[in-house]
Length: 286
Image 1: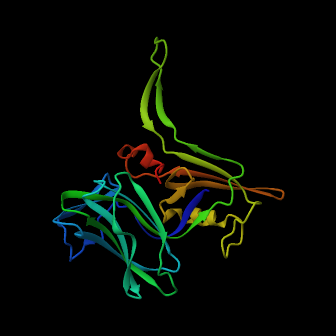
Image 2: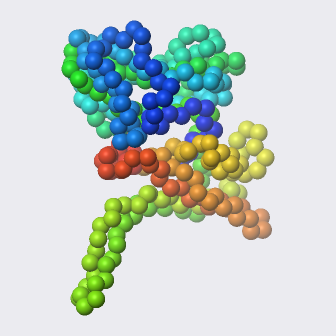
Image 3: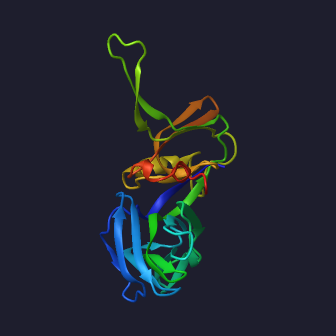
C-alpha cells in the first residue's frame, strides 16, 4: 500500500538549535546538543549507571491534539546497546501531563529507523505544548550519542486506494559524458546520484478517494500542493521504500467519465545522502 502524510502540526527537521533547551533535572553528565550534517540532532552524554537521562525540549504554540494526532520520529543510536537510547515525549498544556510517544525503555538501532503512532490523549480541547527528545542510558557509558533526523506531528496519513495505472520508482545515477576530440570512446565522469523520483498513476473511479468532508476525489493532493510553501516535505511510504518527499505537478486527467490522477514525488534532502547507507536512505529496513 502507498501512503503519504499531510497537514502538519509541528515539524522539526533537526537542522537548527533555535528554541531548544535542555532539561533542568538531567542526570547524564557532559551533555551537548549539536547539529550534524545540517540535518540531524546529535545528543551526547556520559552515564554513571542505567536510567540516567537528558532531554532537549521545544515549546511551540499549542496545537490541537484532536487534529494533529499522528506522529513520526526518525533516529538512531551510536551503540547497539550499553549506551544511550532514544525516547520521545510530548507535554500537554490542557489537561496537564505528558505522554511517551515511544521509548518507555531506551530504544537502540545503529541504522536510521522510523517510529510511528497515534497520540493516545487526543480528545477535544486537548492541547499539546512541547516535545522532548531524550537520550537515556541502559548502562554506565562514556561520551555516547543518539541522533534524531526529524520529529513530526501531523493530522493524518492518506493511503492511496489504488495505483491502478502503475507505480515507478527511479534512483538515477548522474554521469557527465566527456568527448575529447580525437579520442576513441567517451570519458564517463561520475557526478553522484540524482534525487529519487516516484511516478504514480491512479484511477479515481475505483474505490473512495475522498476523506471525511472532501468535495472532490483526490482532494488531499489539492491540500498538499497548496501547503507546499509551509510544509517542506511529506513522508512517503511506497510499501518497500519510505523517505521524505515533495509532491510535484499532480495532474488530474478527466476524459469523459474517466478520472485519472498522475502524481510525481521527488526525494527531499538537506544533507548529502552519502551520510546514510542506501538501506537507510530509502527506508528499506522499516
